[in-house]
Amino acid sequence: NAGVTQTPKFRILKIGQSMTLQCTQDMNHNYMYWYRQDPGMGLKLIYYSVGAGITDKGEVPNGYNVSRSTTEDFPLRLELAAPSQTSVYFCASAASDKGTDTQYFGPGTRLTVL
Amino acid sequence: DAKTTQPNSMESNEEEPVHLPCNHSTISGTDYIHWYRQLPSQGPEYVIHGLTSNVNNRMASLAIAEDRKSSTLILHRATLRDAAVYYCILYGGTSYGKLTFGQGTILTVHP
Image (cartoon, rainbow over all chains, first blue to last red; front, side, top):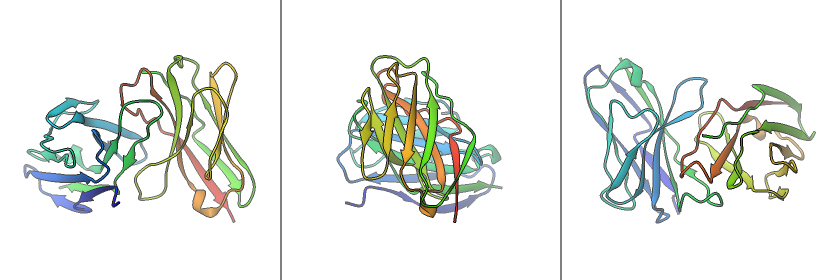
């Protein structure tokens, strides 16, 4: 199993450009998450999904959009990139929301907006 | 969301035990105590979790206070590879599938 994979690893955007961060998991997990991590800080939840076709906002959703058309994929869309979106983005997945389950994280995408 | 409190940083020497504390005085009866760690330039990885009883796995041990208001992650013999940020997170009961990361404890391991 590859687990959770993310592409690209690095990206530099100009202000106002848009892009999609890709996330794929091969564990047949229903739950998927997008987090961002600013320097020296903990992760903050952007969006999450409890299954195909179902998404919901997390703590910091402004400036982002998501979709979940398949169990495996959970892309994150940035429209009109701003310098405040410079961050490292992590995707994660879990089998359920039960306390006995754990989240599996991808390696991250480092995004710089100039 | 139930909150946790951890020291900002701790230091250890290689091959010595490390005890990382976490306070969670507002924990609910259905919250599990999870620990994740984040190595430099990597995504977080799961370490261990427990509900009421102490837990052991190949990576670490988790000691949970009887009143569940605090817990301690124990690395029995720290290695240089254990240098990371360690996060104590309450998960399950009142978190509805969402992990809430604080700033964690930065563990430095000296050779």
